[in-house]
Length: 215
Image: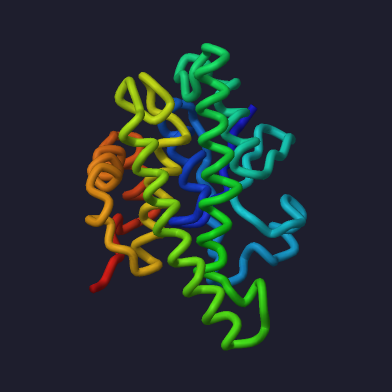
C-alpha cells in the first residue's frame, strides 16, 4: 500500500517525517500550509476532522497523532529499530516519548498560541511568560535525558523518534527566545541529530533553520 505523510514545516510532524525518510520506504510527503489555514479546508478535514498534522495514510487507512504514527512506523519497519526491542528499554523509551508529547509539547503550545487558553490579551501575555519559564526547566530535563543516554541515541543504539522530537522541541525553544547555548549537551546532541542524513534531508525539504534565537 502507498504511504502519504501530511506534514507542516517545523511542526511535530517533523518526527514521523524523519522516520519515514530513515526507513528507506517510498512515500509521498504532502505539505499542509497551516499559516494559510489549509488544515481547515474541507478536503483536509475529510482526512482529519481535528485539522491537525501529522496524518499518515497507508493505503486507505488513516492514522493521526504523533505517538500512534511513530509506533505504527516502528512496527511496519522493524529493521529500522526505531524503538528498542527489549521490553524494559522499550518501555523507558516510550516513557520519554510520552513525556515529550504530553508535557513539553503542550507547554510550547502555551507559548506559541496563548490565545487558545484565553481571549484576554493581558492573560495571554501572562500565560506566555509563565510557559517560557516552564519550558526552560523542561529543556533542562531534556538535557538530562541526553546526558544519561547510552548507545549514541536517546532510544539506544539506533536513531528514532526521541531524537527527532528532541531536535524539534529544542528548536521550538529558540522560537520562544531561549538560547540553545545555555544547554550545551542538549544543543550539541541536536546539532548531531541534524547532521544525520535522513534528518538533514527532511530539514532541507522543510526549509528549516535550526536556531531561531535572537538576543
